[in-house]
Image 1 (cartoon, rainbow over the protein chains, first blue to last red):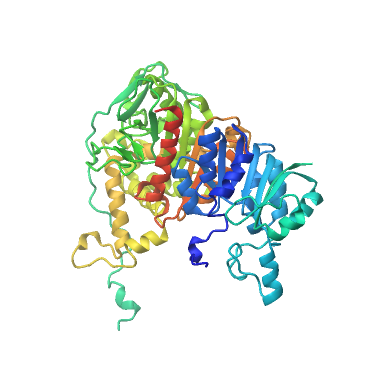
Image 2: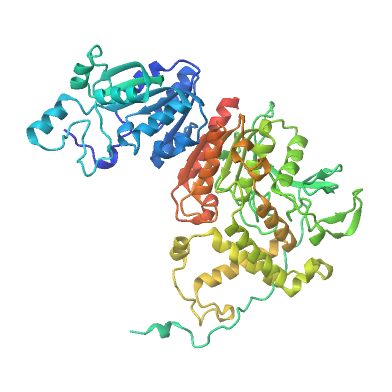
Length: 214
Length: 401
């Protein structure tokens, strides 16, 4: 069913309206927000217009960054691995990383930077523990190809896939407090397995976490 | 098939033959604001009186909140969006400034001033020298014109802006040396600048750029007609030196790709235009650039302004930390660079962006893909125009213009 051309597929989210809405719901009015991998700035525009937020973005794709800047949004061309280090401590209330963690060079360092420059971090990522991924690997013996993981292993920018359980472990390892979390399906609708990590890890296609420093 | 030798003309030039000297354009009167109290310069001198030549486009609104200052580059001037009174050529940024353009004169009141040290009517080496009391001495400043800085240029513009009754500029926009002025504006008068757009520029002039400038200055100094800077005594112009300076500088404004696309290795039709004696088309192009430049620009101005650029180091003005130049600023920034610009490479724009991030400033940044080199900021680059226009429109929306 994946008829999209490689050019139109960007790991920093598309079909993102709903999962962005979930993120937007987590952010209070008037907050200072940094959206890493902000694409064309849909979340920034929403937070600025609807919540009076001071919202800024970083985007690795030049065309998308230009599109965002042309809308008058404060977006810089840059990337999570190299540009976060230049922001001062505690510069933001919320730092958002939407469907990008699995594509950065050093996810652990990016998380550390996010919680250095922001009081809260909001992270969403595709869950590699989803049953279809597990099934495909077990049954075919090949790297899974699903709606979420839709590029062959040698083409994918998603070099650090992880599961919901893995992410909980990393938070524990680095002492981050999980303020809230939920699993969502590919369209960003809340999945009903939020009571159980095991079930969420099996049936959730995407995970959404809000963290703070411990 | 001819061997490589066949491409080489039988008679090789041993020295470049310059076209016949062309007389400078006659002087015209420029619109100016005069400040009898003068201006205290970074070097410690007070220059008195101060004249700032300028042009405006569009209408200042009742709240005086829609003013956008455009800062010109090294050899630009205030005629940003109209036919130039000397050369008759279109304004140097008509692709950007005008009705419905990114700097929209239907919406904004656009100001462009000739820089201090320039030669289009502002106080500079070509204007009459004055003493400490501001009395005219009946001769041009020439090389006695004091050393000036980018900050001096900005202070002169600040006087003009106040003279026009404007307390806050909606935007300050400029490329290259104009971008240096934008940075200096934002650092020196942050409360006067709502939005700042430094384009294709850097927070300091690099050693390589200083080196290129020095080649240009050496060419002027080496021209016998320069006469130690006193060429004005007998109405001469150091045309050869100044045109070589322009030729060198012009190469730095382009890119290898742009030169290849425009000229490649094409030869001049030797039989058709023999008096130029150029072998390759690129040579005659450069020579043309040089010879038209000397008609409108003053050599001592060129020396003064290139020095001001060389001195520029915004971090050094703030204890070596560029971020501290912008700490606590409420100004919104739009930084843009061009991928093939090797005079002010993207890395220098990125350093500005990182300093602004460190200062927690509101900043947008894009690197525009272009093969046109540094010149790209003056040319038709739709992505750049959209981004700059969007930035200014965003500023205007927030101010309520």
